[in-house]
Image (cartoon, rainbow, N blue to C red; front, side, top):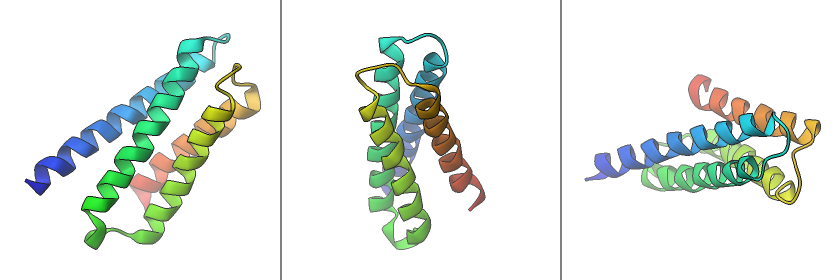
Length: 110
């Protein structure tokens, strides 16, 4: 049962990543409301499923890595929420995509 739950959470976690990066790609073009909503939704899904995965895998988790990933994911969501009312400027866009890519790198290489 636990393996199924972990697999489902991991699957949804990756879908959240796809939505987040897709929303950021939309933001690279002129301001579109949909892109901002996708970034917020993807970041929220990433954060929630990451917490769920950590809760299930707590005994086997690298807690320092999990903390770093949580802080980076929370920062991505914070930038997305701060910019929700207006288009991402270049700094916000670069910050958000940089943090997102860094978080994927932490997950893969740490």
